[in-house]
Image (cartoon, rainbow, N blue to C red; front, side, top):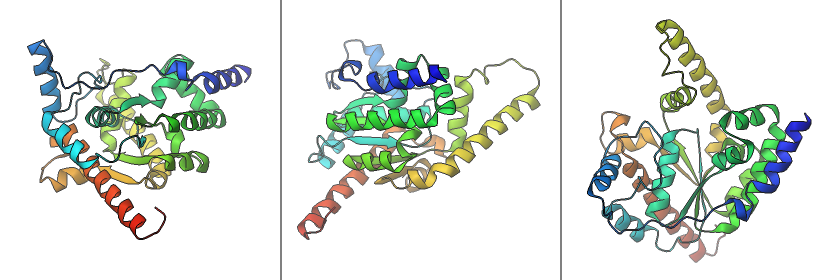
Length: 281
């Protein structure tokens, strides 16, 4: 118990301290000097959702995407963006590509906590054994990061688990990335090495996946109303349907970012109309 309290205290004081958040150069439109690197990035951009989390450098937006985002959100600068939803590679990749497309900094609150506490397992244990401490850390982090302005923050579930944190999300624009749970389960199993197992008992493997899906579905059902409070919701299934795709596998990261940008543009227009009418936004 004392160790958990110490972890919470350490995380609260150092998690989002200015010195713990290293600045990164914003995306540069200058083409890479290495042609093969350019082809690799191009391939990642055009394919359906990658099966692994990509780096910011791999997620260079296309010139067309940069042009469309600049036209749509030109008056949106310095407003922080909070990405919520079931944690998975797709959610983080979308957040990174969005950040690069609108020339924002990208941070992930869960990754920052992992760095402070000593890895994914330590964070999982902290969250499961001391939910109050976990939420306090999330609150402190959101308080500090709301002042950073041009930021895309990929949030953990703590951001929507109490009214204090939900209120802090109102300092920017919150976006729920709603992904198929199958995608999130596969990521979860890969992160624990389950899918890489050579266990010949396929029934056992199926049982593990079903158990993981059941837990994730329960978590999703508990939080979906809170996710739904977000200013914007972008569903992979809805984007696939709107674009006439026969499967969600055909949806690209750029498809998702473009839909986010369209909805941000509509939000800006709505805000302008309400301000013109003299009503609070």
